[in-house]
Image (tube, rainbow, N blue to C red; front, side, top):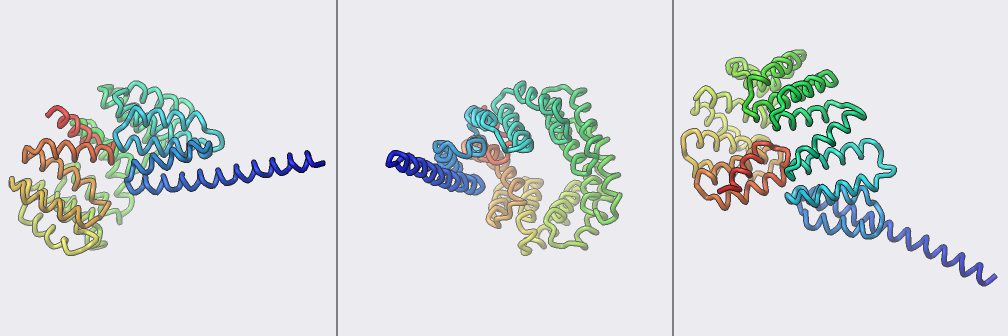
Length: 348
């Protein structure tokens, strides 16, 4: 009888210890996610490791660790973490597995192993083709010079999801590859999609800007700004239309007018930096970029940070430019232009 009570108590103790361990693991995992979102990658990795050491939340914690490692440009370790996440997948579902596989593919590509990324994309498409994975494989194919295969992927993607954003994204991939002419047909598709709604003035302005129809772009963007004067995207793009037609004075006046609006200030300072760059005033451009970053508007930070790299290059401050580029690629690993800047600076 005593032995039975002892075994029952021991079993209860195991259950209690297991429950506590699980709670501790969950707390560590949540802390890791919070640190990851805040950009504190070392803290994130430490928290995820605590969760992993407990034996709980393994797929989630390994994936979180992989993301933190990828943002630190530690692509070999991030690839291993993503693979471990997939190894321990149990009840997370198809979406979790697919997203983790896409992270793994991206990490492999950044690691300099595009063939591994291609294998992952192809396996996912074979199982269940979707527009996003086809787009990503098309993007990689174009980067590798497989132009026919890239177009086939893009065309299949738009058949599955004929949406405005996808058309624009495909065009931008071609533009980044200096093949804007090949991407122009997708712009026409985007324009057709945007004009289905007479209220999509920004979208129509953006497509006309890419098509170099600057008069139409200006008309649409002015309408968009009247509709929503707090839309920083509209202000920034309208100024770029002025710059494209060499109307620096109107661009500068527009941007200056919007530096006092908290919703448009960051983009307006970035626009003023573009005006300065067009006039060769790089020191003033850098001051405007710094003013824009001080606003703390995440929606404008990517453009500001990229221009910051370019401006340090103009000053021939290669050390700072390289540091800024490394941080940029860690934060925006999918930006091809940023990756090219980093690769260029790595040789300086």
